[in-house]
Amino acid sequence: MTTATATETVKLFVNGDFVKSKATQFSPVYNPSTGDQIAQVPFCSAEETGQIVQAAHDVFPAWRDTPVVERARIMFRLVSLLEKNADDVARIISREHGKTHAESLGSIRRGIEMVEFACGIPTLTMGDTVHNLAQDVDCETYHHPLGVCVGITPFNFPFMVPLWMIPVAITCGNTFVLKPSEKVPLSVMRLAELLQEAGLPPGVFNIVHGDKTCVDTLLKHPLVKAVSFVGSTPIAKYIYETAVQNGKRCQANGGAKNHILIMPDADIDRSVAALQTSAFGCSGQRCMAGSLAVAVGEAGEPVVERLVASADKMKVGPTDRDSGADMGPVITRQHLDGLLANIDQGANEGAKLARDGRSVKVSETPDGFYLGPTIFDHVEPEMHVAKTELFGPVLSVARVKDLDEAINMTNSHPYGNGAVIYTRSGRAAREFKHRAGAGMIGINVGVPAPMAMFPFTGHDASFFGDLHIQGREGIAFYTQQKMIMTRWHDGGGAGEFVTTRG
Ligand code: NAD
Image 1: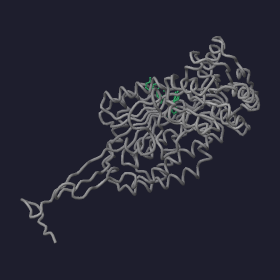
Image 2 (image 1 turned 180 degrees about the vertical axis):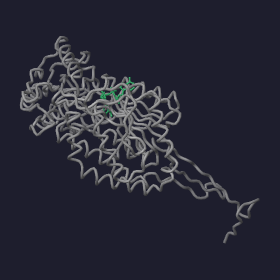
Image 3 (image 1 turned 90 degrees about the vertical axis):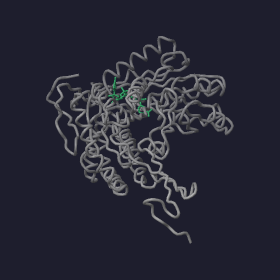
Image 4 (image 1 turned 30 degrees about the horizontal axis):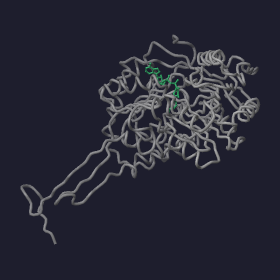
């Protein structure tokens, strides 16, 4: 935490205005490519956070009563604004996060898909009807919004993860308060501008910045109805428990250790190319990163050999300029130091360092937070590097004798986000897809992150809640159903309309 400095202080977005926070505590925001501080983000007090919730609550009745097709039209306009501004937004993401320009653009594309999905909400929120369910009784359901919904998001996808939540929540008729990661608060400010330009009325979408004080206020505030969280497992568990204890709906996505199985019959070149992208894309800072490769039988030697050779060719460098880098920095100096300590521990526990990324040199920007692609071979399940989500460009390779051992290894891990198999055998793929204990399965697909119309189905320690983010579950999360049963007696009763049957 810092006190005020000369750098830009990030504003709040409340009731359609960008306003200066009254906070007295701030956190630095870095450009990880250079190591320079580029902004500071305020840590809002409980009082200021509560005022923002109140603002979102005040506009809820008018927004709820805005016809759903009008709400959806704003999303149609947002799609074209996002497409038009994608290049500029990508530059903000790369500067605050360190993704390459292509990675930032890719993340915006996935976000746009969520907005496109929300354009269909008039259809997706249609209820059911049954005529004459009992004598003279008709029954119908409607999907109504909840009220103020809250999103608390991680650093690794500054723009995309908020878009997993906001378009669906607001098009369903809710109002929204976002608490972005304090490490990457800049690109979502641009999203607020674009929402405004698309015609979203003031107060429907708001941004608050802060730490635990701010989050706890959101979790306990009586006017907050639902909480969507994406982040690490310990915080996801805390968020879920606290929100539920305070009577909120909650969906909380946690961390991951995604196993990538490579069978001896797999196309090794394709598998290695996919593994490299999965493990080192976004510098390994992805909840769907393949961070533990499980080489089955004879696959071990060729996989490690070719993986090291292709990782050697990757250019690590700054992403805030056109440097031609294949991989950028990690998020902060502190995170880099943690990764270095984890690599030390892996080596001390006996994992073989097949490629050591610690020696990487980036002469153009030597103070950036860089780690080159790092590969551990002969990793055993009880080692720290196998058990822990490191969240950096560090890939562990375990070697096992057969598919059974590989599936057992996958299933004994506490996380259950993604799992992948590379094989030419339909039989092995079928065995894997039904037995693997993870919510998102890839068969010859390295990063099986679902598109907007499918739910993001983490299991076990990777998810806390009932209804997942995205897809129809996302719609169900942001709406409540009302069932209406109607009887109009033939012949009429007191005050009832009298009909005559033909
Ligand atoms: P994090 O848990 O540290 O932070 C996430 C959010 O929680 C941030 O907004 C942060 O300000 C807030 N927060 C942090 N500590 C808190 C506390 N004690 N009390 C209340 N709020 C707190 O996560 P991160 O480091 O920003 O992101 C990386 C993690 O997110 C990884 O574990 C990654 O796997 C996970 N992730 C999961 C998914 C998924 O869909 N499963 C997607 C993206 C990222």
